[in-house]
Length: 269
Image (cartoon, rainbow, N blue to C red; front, side, top):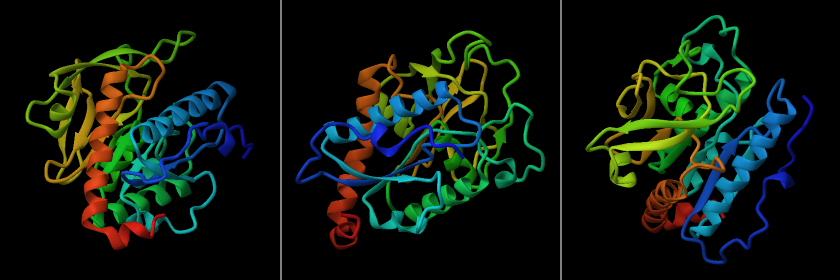
């Protein structure tokens, strides 16, 4: 696989806090099969902004690039929190499928399995987990949920062929959910560019956000910080306040975990 994105392309030129509020594990594949130059630029931009937001809010991080096999994906349990970022489609065999949809792209089952192990290990250790786009889908699959292979009526969710991929999309936030308490609104205008989405919701999860056509845009566990959003709060034109609210809530939960599990959290540093 050609490496179009290097680690140095995404690490922010910002000083990491000397006494961080939390130390977070960030998992994504910087490169995936058949990535083109446009997708590579999106990965660079989105990842850099996500990592910058962590630093700006007082957290430190380790970046685990699942382009190549993770040495020990279960070690996410040693961090204060887990952030799962976007990327290619999840292999359908991870959720009971047999044949990938013809429009699937970027499939890397080994990376999927590493990511699922990372999620399950962090959850077993009671670490807060935030998933974005592909991360949201993986959180659902890790709980036995399924995905829609391709959204046929895509007009709300991504641009038409030849048009910009990302667009503004209204998402209705479910009252009483953690996401609602974080964003403090019942409808958010988000930046979306996805062709797959959550189908059957995983065990113990609830729908925290839906598109106007009913497509699931967010899932969460009401008993813990296990939250995914399908959209990209780290997209350049996404509302800054919503991104900061979402990341601050995640870091605050990781900070609390750090305080409650100081000996275990120290292993992640």
